[in-house]
Image (spheres, rainbow, N blue to C red):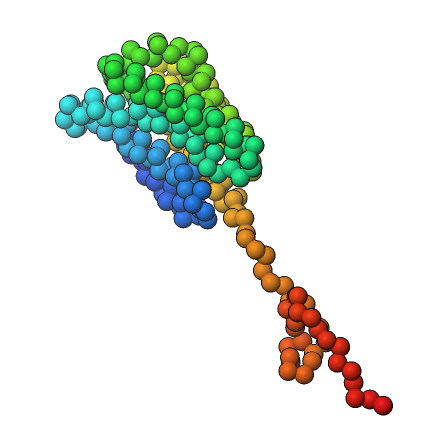
Length: 249
């Protein structure tokens, strides 16, 4: 993240809180992947904090390389399949779920390709002007098409989701990336991941709008005239009420 290790760890602490609260508000198992997004970003920010400490010699310099690989693995490999998968698991409508399943499969393939390329090339990280600049040879193998696919995998599923306000999450991700590329071109990966991490706090707001679909409706009660033996005057729906003739003349 830009600025410092302190900012990275601070963002990680905020995101951890947001993730825990989101998970506590998740009312169904299918919401767990989505509600857990802030926690994954929190771990990612903590890892970049370690990159900062290693590059500034406050941690052993030998930790810089594995921490860099870990950060880039989370940023470049995990998110292309995690976001579509979270959207697919959430979806109830069959046609939406079928499309999201296809996108999730594409995301898994893209993630496997990026993982192989990342692990088969050297990566470098350096601090410059209060930012971390990442350099990796495999980036040229993807070019603009790879970047477009990456963004599509993160943004399109949010628009296909039937969850209310989910599209705002996708718009925020897209706009934050465009801003990072325009303003912080050389540090886009680090800066955008910070923006996306902060944006993920809105996951909590979206989770709160979700409501579990109830099963059988509760048994309703219909008020009736009191009968002997039923002082409450309430008869469950479905019970046949007999007309009892009065003992009049």
